[in-house]
Length: 239
Ligand code: FPP
Image (cartoon, rainbow, N blue to C red; front, side, top):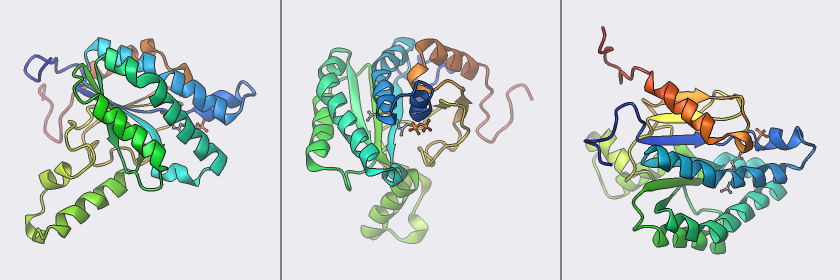
């Protein structure tokens, strides 16, 4: 599907803030790690459902730059889960024609995990059905700072720095801005996720915790999106 044929009612790019793994675990008397593990198990069905609906880009917030503040055991657990996810799923993702992109930085990530991420990106670069943005060690403010540093470092005069230039230096530079951001677990925050790119995104939240978020919830969200009147700061078509 290209831009000319895509339905304006279908988001081209969905971002998901996968929240509530800890509360999901607590409600079952399980550990937080078990909650994150259940969260990872939910990723593949949601990627598949998103692709089946015809959405071209899906970005998942898996580990934020602020998540380093969590206990080191939990942080290590999340790193291990990403490594296991990539070991287990890259072949399946290739079979399903899913291209992986990494959003964020490798700073502070162990070499063996950075290597796995780079390998997953390289091995799936030919895939065309859907692009999966994995926001891992991602912070929107940090991404903007890095972009501006690159622009300044190459000697661009201040009065020539444009919005377009900043967009082109973000880690999402080859991905369209998200049309729609979904957050599970009933929270209403962006939490530093794609903050530049989400300037005109529509938002949707559900009380459902991420491990319980199903393709039916996704469809419900997309149906809701289809009713929205996106104005981008202009006037409604019906005004
Ligand atoms: C929020 O749950 C979730 C995260 C910290 C990130 C999302 C992580 C996953 C789905 C698993 C990791 C995925 C990969 C690919 C490594 P929370 O701990 O904030 O839940 P709570 O607010 O209920 O405590």
